[in-house]
Amino acid sequence: MIVRNLSECEKDRKVNDPNGNWNSVRMLLKNDGMGFSFHITTIYKNKSMQMHYMNHLESVYCISGSGNIKDLATNEVHLIKPGVIYALNNHDQHILSADQEMTLACVFNPPITGTEVHNDKGAYELK
Image (cartoon, rainbow, N blue to C red):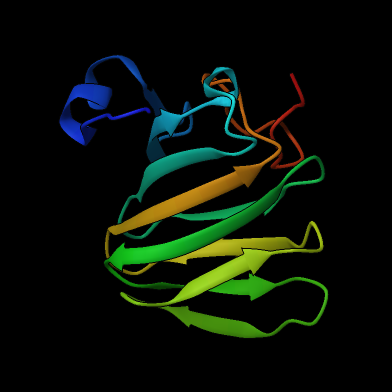
């Protein structure tokens, strides 16, 4: 059984975006052997990022804050607010924007190892 506390994980499992758009506390990682990773991610107010997780599938649940996600294949824009989940089930290229600071619970498959940040294509590398 794995039991972790968010405030404890913030001490040694928190990754800050080098571009200043987000931070992510990686609570479960590849070496935990679960087959996915789990993160609590904060997207800062008035930040916007284009991403394309070519190597991972991601599911995201909004805990607090608000913003939107734009699907770049269809140009559809969806409101993100508490209670909303979205899943990038087709490696969807997208733009995520925060109107208010957003706290998100994120699941990645395959799991990440812990220190990844987005590459120039907006993806995490496989490790």
